[in-house]
Length: 196
Image (tube, rainbow, N blue to C red):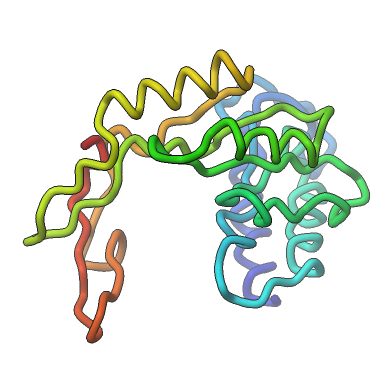
């Protein structure tokens, strides 16, 4: 936890200067920057690893102590993985969803809304496709029709918002990002474009 706190404190010294509005650690008003939200963790409760409420509460406390006044959020893959209700007594951390064009969008967003009826419904990662791996057959996911169908459900049925992940981009610098270890410890390197 000590190393994380050093990293967060150092990063937030820079990032809070670029928030859209609020006050920095010195109490000076800041405004007009491009940062409107701050994600505390990504898919933290979606993994098979042990989780800690103390850890995410500490993250929140660090971000607020450094003067970030904008919206905080966490993002998980849905269903039972929307666990933060009650974790933050301050109720200022928004739960958001990670969904794909082949997800049961209506069900997932209904579950999200049931857990935070007064908060905004946001799909912070709307997957436009599925990863392709070098040397393997192209994954087509559900194609453009599925993408359009699920996006309409998000916007018009659930009255929610969506952030596309990822239309294009990403990087695979030196095999240090965008890869995973597959069966038999074979390194699977991602192709950097997720729009399938």
